[in-house]
Length: 170
Image 1: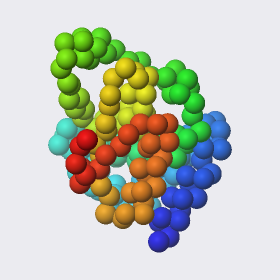
Image 2: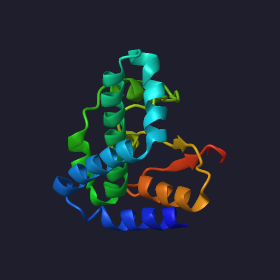
Image 3: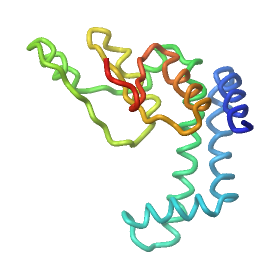
């Protein structure tokens, strides 16, 4: 319940917090997560070890950056209702949509699949810039139903349709 209330408060507050404050604040919170949660730090380092090897100093540097990036992603999720579509579009470089238009012109559908890298919250808004195309975003349902509903409403705040993996596609 407390976690949900914190998320609700963040969803109310952070669309109103200017990025000059929000980004540094959430990077700092990412540092706190790194320093105050040894279990999270160890889990992140273990995952990174598969890629970068056993250089402990490098692993810890990267683990700290992962914590910072994760919290910046949360800031952008909570801040999403505060963005205009024009502001979102200015942040992204989008290439290759001509292939989707060509498939559509041929009467074909396209299934886009992406690795989970970068800020997925921003990436999920890209379809809004192409109203000619009909997008549905499929997301994993969270265990906490109240938090899931809140996250879903934040993700759809700009108008994108989000469908949980547990619901049938329309």
